[in-house]
Image (tube, rainbow, N blue to C red):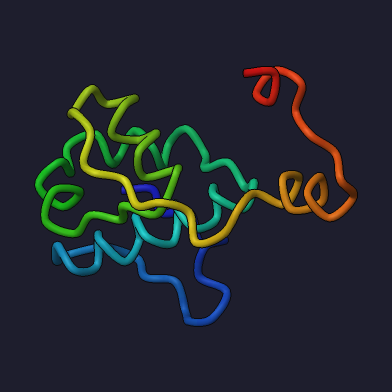
Length: 106
């Protein structure tokens, strides 16, 4: 098994992921990194193809990367959470009084 050790900055990276909980932690770390722009290595993604049971048991509904993995593996989607706040660009537009002409014409 190939483990992306870069997602373990806070602890010593494991050599193996023997339990579903270990796999869930790894998925959470990969998704968190990808959500912030660090794309996982192809080998790490290939390893997860057989982990549908872990994705189902430990969902991360607030993670766009989690939903991307499910879509990529064609596992079907789970309910997504609404974002905690408006996107940064939208907050800046509101602060500066800009409106979207494609939305506001109605």
